[in-house]
Each structure stands twice: as C-alpha cells, then as structure tokens.
Length: 587
Image 1 (cartoon, helix red, strand yellow):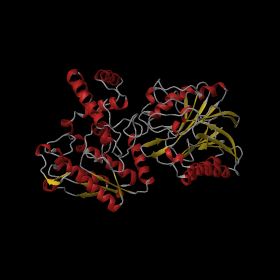
Image 2 (spheres, one colour; image 1 turned 135 degrees about the vertical axis):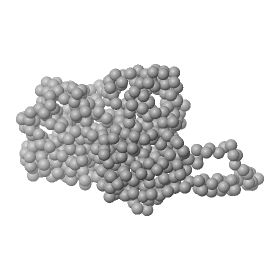
Image 3 (cartoon, helix red, strand yellow; image 1 turned 90 degrees about the vertical axis):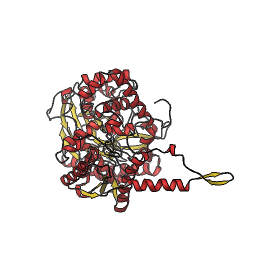
C-alpha cells in the first residue's frame, strides 16, 4: 500500500487556503499512484478554531468545503482514498459537534470516524465543543485491513498516570485484527515531544502493525506544530517527514520500504529526533506575522542577549530588510551596549535607529504637574492639597525609561505598519522582572524560553557578538544595575521557575528531590550546573531563596496576564494552557 503523508499548514477559518493545500495533497497522491492521502486533524476548519466553532456559518462553510473535496475526487482513481478532518453536527444528546475523520474515494464518502478520546488539559479544551465517538472504522484498502484514529486516540502524551481514559481505541483495533492504523494529528510542539511520540507509538506497533502518523505543521497563535509525520512498523521507523517550513507530500510504499532506524523509542535517539528549537521559533513567528497580515517587524534593541536573539529570529522570519531595530540609550546605558547592538545589526543586515531618551525632564515635569494640580474632590467642593512626599516610589523614575522606549516602539509601529515584538523571556516574566506593560506588544518570540535557552541560541550563531551573551544581564535603568543582583543568578533562578511552573513544585523539600532527579539524569536545566550545585549545598539559604522566588511568581500573575502571546515550547507556558487566578491567597 502506497501512502501520501500530506503534512500541511492550516489556519482556522481560512477555508479557501486550507482547501488549496488539500487539493495540492490530493494531486500529489494521485500523481504518485497512492492508495491513501492522509491529512492532519481538522484539516478543513483548521486547528485550534476554538469558539469560532460556535458560529453556525463557520460550520456550514466547513461542510461546504468537505463537499468540494468530495467533488474534486470524483474523477480520480477509485483506489485513491482521501482522509481529511472536519467538524460535523451532533444532532443527538451531548456536545453540539463531532471531531471527524472522513474517508473519501471517487466522489463519495466511504467511511466516517469520530474521535473518541477528547483531551481537556493544557491548551486543549475539546470537551468544550465535541461529543466523543465510540465506534471503530475499519476499511479494506489495497489488500490491507485499515483502522482510523484521531490524535489522542492513538497515544497519551502527558507522561502521567492520573489522566486515563476508559476506552483504548488502539487496543480495540488490535483485537479487530487491523494491520494498518491511520492517524490524523494536530499535535503541537513541546520540548522533547517529537521523540516522545516515537517513544510511545513505536512500541504499540508491535507486533506487525503499521502506524501512519500525519501531523500538522506551522504556527497558530501561541502554538507551533512541528510536523514530524512518520510511519512505523513493528517498532521500527520506516519514514520521517522532516520538512518544517513548507508543506510536504511524501510518498511511502509501506509494503516495500525498509526501516531507516530500528527500535526508535530508545533514549539515545532523543536529540536526533527533535527539530531545532530556533527553527520552531522562527516558524511560529513567521506564521503569526504573515497570517496576521503584516510584513515588517520593529523591536527595541538594547545590546542585551534577549533582544539580540529576538532580532535574529525576526530577521530569519521575515528577512532583515523588514526588521527595524531601535536603539534607545539613556544616561545609564553603557558604551558596550551601544557598540554590541550596532555590530549585531550590521551582522544581521537589518535597519538600525538610534533614539536617545532623556527621562529626567519628563519625570520632573510630571511630578511638578501632579503637585500643582493636586485636588481633592470633597462633598463641599474641591480643595487644593499636597501629595505626601513619603508616598513617592523612586523606582518609577527608573521604570519611566522603559515606558518611554515602549512609546517610541509603538509610535514606529503605528506610523509605519510594523508589528512590534516583545523581547521578554520566561524567567523574567515569571518573576515580574519587567516594567508593567513593557512586555505587552504584539508577539513575544522567546516568551517561553528560560534564560539559559536564550543564551544557548545566542552562542550558536556567529552573527550575535560574543560579548552580548558573555556580559552580565542588565536592564540598565540605574548605575551598576544587574538582573542577578536584583533576583538570583540565572543558573539558580531558571530551575526554580521551571520546577514551580512546569511541575508544580511548591516546597523546597519537593524542589530538592526534583533537582536531584534532574541532575542525576543530566538534564539541561541551568546555564551553570556548578553554581547550582554549590547553592543547593547551603540548604538554609537555598530554602529562603526558593520561597522568595516561588512567592514572587505567585504575586506576579497580574502582570503576566497582560503580556502578549508568544511561542509555546515547554510543557507549561504562561498563556492559554496555564489557568491561575489573578486574585488568590494560596501562592
């Protein structure tokens, strides 16, 4: 049996664009004499469509496009089976819709499968919309007994034992004697997940079952889909689609192809089977910009590592000729920051602007106006009064520098039609270590990256000057200010944030166990393991530090909730998948 793995980039509600990609896949399968053309989950409406689904016209258009696909297949070989995902109405009791895989051949529907296992965790909320199915679909195609599944039906990617389903479609297909499983997927990227998919699915193909796994690719809001569609049989990898930046329609004769790698679920294959993190960030940023109708980007470029990496990603996403990097030095900015930023822009070939900011006259003017116009509105009429000098927080004088820089970036965006990018990372976002609203632009490419990940990307590229990632990180809002003096060394801070946010570790005793486990496994959790070890060997101080940071993370939810979206690459990111009350007394 020959299969065409139609790994495409869909967009919610872009029915015309999605249809064009579907037709391209059908044409590729037909030209290659394929027996099956398999597309990702919810191919026609796009994934995640979220509450667009509630609009009746959205569902109607989705069904109209399904009919267009059926009509398009009418003159093709009856041996060509097309498998697309769509939404159907549930006219019985339960949730209003079904998540469906439709099998089409020669102008008619020959099979329909309703997704059985509906995820309702992290970014997924399918139980909000869909009613679960309870029946298998088995078809005879090219002499093989073929069963169909949709994403979660095939595997459990949560790595936990406390989220179990009553049904197991894969096991039911095995008992039904199926020899080939076709799976439609929209599985977003998480660090280590490409290997995890193979690790969990490949063993399930033993003995003598072929699994055809087709996944979506491309960026959608905060999510990035890495594709990595594959075919496995008897635990062996037969084919892997590694295209990331363009749609691919790989043809695989699963009855003849030989394994390219045996027992792919072994741990040593993990790094080999994961796409480059930088490329996924570029892909998500590019799709967010282009799908939103923009072509140009603007950012504040300080000469620091965060803005340098964002500038690099922006140049790769839309081309350096479309990236506008604005340097905004103040009286506290160092000479090396200016020189580092200029050298970076020269290396990348992007636009460079210098807009000096002088915040002190603005602070003086504002405070004079506040004092001179202070009026208390009483029942008997307004009276002039004075602000209490002791109430004044001098940190406001520092933060207004960030606010002025934001103003300049937003003005450029508004005047020249460039999408403004935030340069904040996950570690500082967790701790609220940024001026309120300073991370509230259109998109934050490194929002879900810990500091060590940002530094690792910077180290990997020659066009980012070494001094940018070697020097101590600083917001340069005051003389001699550094991030680590205000918080903790990032070598310690990163793992605390990761444990607290991703694994819900809330006590130092739990963190000690977590840390020991990760150090033993040699997991990358810090930019300097020696600093982390030395800190952990002073448990009294370490506990104080942990409690300080964990409490800070809890208190900063009000700031994080107002930040812009950014690419999700970790198990738990700040965004739609993490639901914490802003006002609460637990953290």
